[in-house]
Image (cartoon, rainbow, N blue to C red; front, side):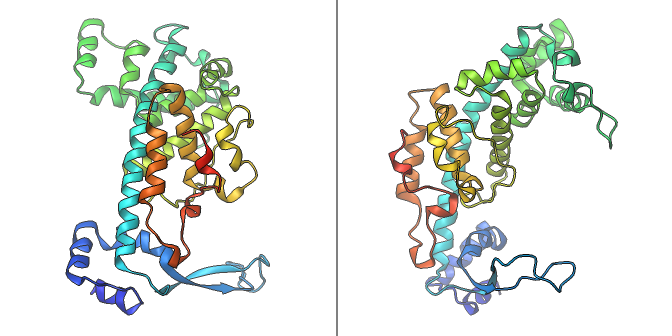
Length: 322
């Protein structure tokens, strides 16, 4: 029995009936992503090379998780962390939805200045997107993008798409077509735009370099996918990290420039989200709601040596303009 196994490993379960209800409703393996951080860890002074199994690849100790839990671990600790993470994902999706809508306008206007079918013309995009062939598929990134665009148009049931198809036929003007593009489609297209067009959009958000902004959108698309698939967010490791502009362009990101740990945690992406939200809607309360969530809803896990530091929060985060 799963609950018995947890108790054998040292987890305190004060209400077994309620715990079983959570396991049935949420699932053992979804909750396990939250109590993973509660497990005891050992320290290996000489980690072995995974292939040779003989020589150490690093002198830095490697801590590995054990099956047993840290003293004081309770089942409720995992549930509380899960609930916090769910609230964090919902709040993040609220902001990303608004950012996605703003980007549709930005990109469709930027391309529409060339012509209404600009998204079809390879000559209007960067050569790495429009002419360079993928070695595996033999297609350009633009070809691949057009395939995704066509699929989105074909499966759309929106009345305005049907109306434009019937009245004007295909292709659709960029300011119509953009309304079915999801965050991934938008970020991919932006990454392929000519540098001058990229810069024109990024400068609206106070970022002078459009390539830096493209890395932001790519990372925010990753963040959106994590949230949309109900995956654990709070202490997730961000492998594909966005580039950082100069501190004067994004002061609220200054804490991340010289800290590799914090750059690899989701709080930096939330700060990027807040930067964009302040441009899109300066009167938005999103930043204040995020601050309140972190202050009031993150569970007390000090007995397990866990805190907001695990998601990359810096000591001075409360002093920012939220």
